[in-house]
Length: 560
Image (cartoon, rainbow, N blue to C red; front, side, top):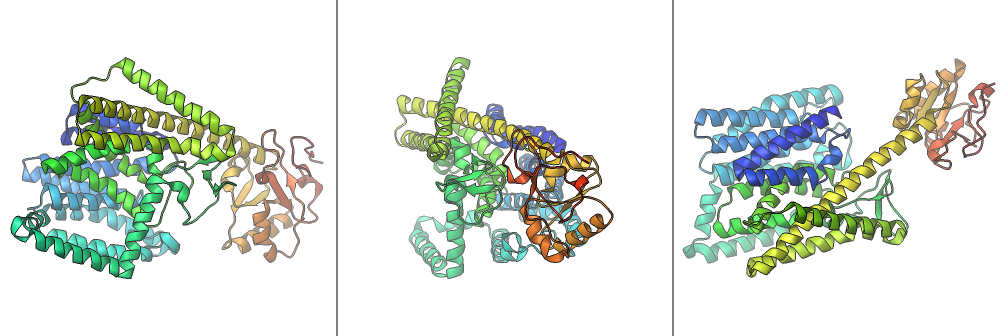
């Protein structure tokens, strides 16, 4: 968590430095402000997941690639690209998805930055080798697989074999883009003499891709994944997990809070379209191309399996895209604002209005389970739709009134996103405090030296600190848990099975039955929570019966 907080400061600097090289200092300041305050990035500053640490490697590699593109020294550029590759390879040991940064840099160099230089991307690949070897060596130790991308024998969407067709397709794209000067070829293809033939050839290629079932299914999976993860996460049906559940109205919640698609965390997303439209008009793609690849890579990769990040309120897997979305949106806002300054009074008025509306919706949702999720999520759709409509209107009819409306909606969307993510962070801290209180209540009465067999070992960290032995259990370790229970019981120690799942898993391996009725840890705040239930072996001595026979906040049985 400390490393994440330090890495966040580094990511802020790298975002500023990258935006300054791509654009100018004013856009760089706006980029950092949007990333730091109008996205869900602060939620992961003090998180246990190493997202910020991984993002610092990601952003460092991209910054070095930008520096290599802007330098006039071949030697300095080569060193920068080698170091960029090194950061990608090392970052892969923090989070596997950092390898996407290598692909982003490769395609950006070949398609936009240095299309005539086939050697530059090879330096990036060469720089990645030490990190890839380190990752393969660690995976050999952990899983017995000398592969930098292995998660062991996990199967399903996390299994490496599932991505073999995509890896093969990516390999074909890499080979083609490296051997062919794609920009030059495209310029020739859209020239007047062959334009019609090129369009017909493109039609045939697209038709063939749709006709081939595996390719069609892959494209459909990515497109539906993008809709679910970017627009409407409530439509998610691919998989479910503990804590991420639907309520009686079919609304997807995590620990009682609505899970958000990307646009429901950052309704200002349409601002990123402004520089893209201008790039198409002016045919200057280098800066926008880098940001586009950096955004599209994580979005498409995780859309493939509809991975929404599990135990989180937002799309944490899309965190690497946020700095680049912030850069594009800062550039878009600057283009819309022009020479108009944003006064403190105007900024305060917009922020207060956004905050009042958001809190009003939250208050309304708190009084109705049916409207809880719509009140928390649907206003962002409306804001994004209005902003997108204003941007399109400005594109076709750039009058002062339309431009002013676009400015107001853009600033309002940024303010609303800031309030959303501030409220979300407060929710995170409140949930952490609640979990700590529950863990203390669960652990309070457990005697030192006893054994607790549990599927929720993090709830028993306070007990471990007092000398209680905690053993995690699942289907693979149930027999070992039974042996541990027998050994502790034989030695005269207390043995507890934390809630009904360990009972179900371990009972078939025990010669001694487990009592059918649980005993309850006492709590003032979580009286009926099933996580407070413990089961005992039949015939457990009285000194181990330190809990109440009923859930509640009184009636604790004292030690004999």
